[in-house]
Length: 195
Ligand code: GDP
Image 1 (tube, helix red, strand yellow):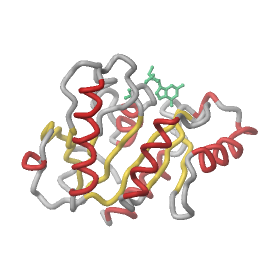
Image 2 (cartoon, rainbow, N blue to C red; image 1 turned 30 degrees about the vertical axis):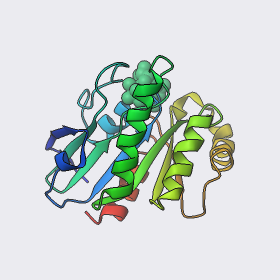
Image 3 (cartoon, helix red, strand yellow; image 1 turned 135 degrees about the vertical axis):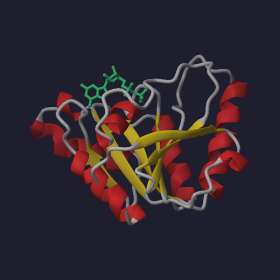
Image 4 (cartoon, rainbow, N blue to C red; image 1 turned 45 degrees about the vertical axis):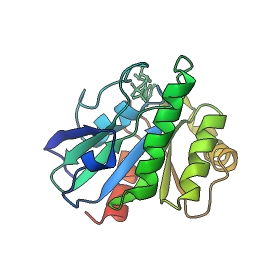
């Protein structure tokens, strides 16, 4: 999809704040620093649109980006900040649980892991949670420019195994540096949302 118009519609914490346009939407989840803003920026052809690494301690919100008034990208705040208190963590968990379990227009979730490393325990927990809610899942292995081409197949197997992916779940290796995987991520989004 050719994207020219993007607007941050709302930063929401509660369901009554979610947009009511009825556009289909895709959510993006991943631990902080995994490359989520970089992926979003490549998808929408912007250099610096999606906020880079929202800071720990700041209000954690679900950010709804209107893409061409056809769909929403929903930026789910990153998990895995060591410094965040237990109370903050519980608040985050409640917010995303409500979102993933109740949000009707949600057509799928892109979940990001670092392609260079084994998925972490928190990555696995996120995938288990998305499986529990039976949400269509695309796992994006980020920063693949750092992985030699000869090792990339092994990366995919490592991700599939480490996250106990189901057959229907797709994996795409991605690089924000050389744009590897961009078209495949878009193809998945288009298929899920019908845009
Ligand atoms: P976020 O916290 O998940 O939004 O992560 P960012 O998109 O801000 O990226 C975190 C860091 O990883 C930044 O220093 C990026 O420049 C770097 N990074 C993100 N994507 C890539 C990539 O595809 N390749 C490389 N080499 N570095 C990346």
